[in-house]
Image 1 (cartoon, helix red, strand yellow):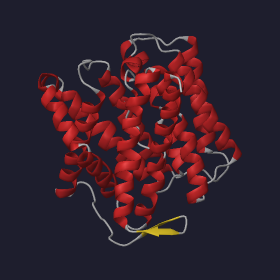
Image 2 (cartoon, one colour):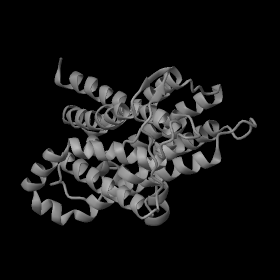
Image 3 (cartoon, rainbow, N blue to C red):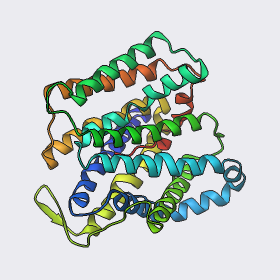
Length: 318
């Protein structure tokens, strides 16, 4: 394979692996696990797997860690812990694909923030993308059919998306001497510690079940899902994301990452029996097209471009 072709294959594999997160978490949630517990074992397991490489990277760049510690803490709190907690809570009542689509609207929110707060007027292509995404969102929420989606789940999905927005805005100020692996590893540790602390003081319900969990009529022990969430849905997709962006560059890598939504919807249909109406399917397509237009319309100094300089840094939660 050529360097670029192999990069595309690896990027698609990364998106596919990321898309399994909601699918693998759903059986645990249905077996009595709280959202906080499911996120904690996913992040904690990934942090444990990555612990030695993370310590090595910290020892190699202590000055970078010290000078960017606020960013690393914010990364662990918002896109790692906050976004995943919102997503896992949302999929209790929302289809996995719809929750992901709402979360992936984050670039559109960033455009609005930059316009309202900093006076950075978006170009015609960006505006067209934002409008397209909003129309798609209305169709996805399907408010006029009488069978709209659960508003509480939608609120949690929006909360997850806002955590991603925080990440995008912070990333415009981070130094380039932080490697993707270092950011991810430290972020996992920070997110794990924050969730554990919230559970210990009673701010976040933490309930786990030691019984089996069932996915598509196949029952596995709880620890099987935990290992799969940590390795298959977290560590492997982040590693392959790093490999992909080194071959493709951040812009193309970010576009291919949108395939995660498509994979998640297909897997949810096949394994969870979750389907969408025709209008929701059309809305999903419009959201993806809109996000692509927004990204194509990004000017060079925009925080979105800085945030996507390494696909592996993206706070992917699906």
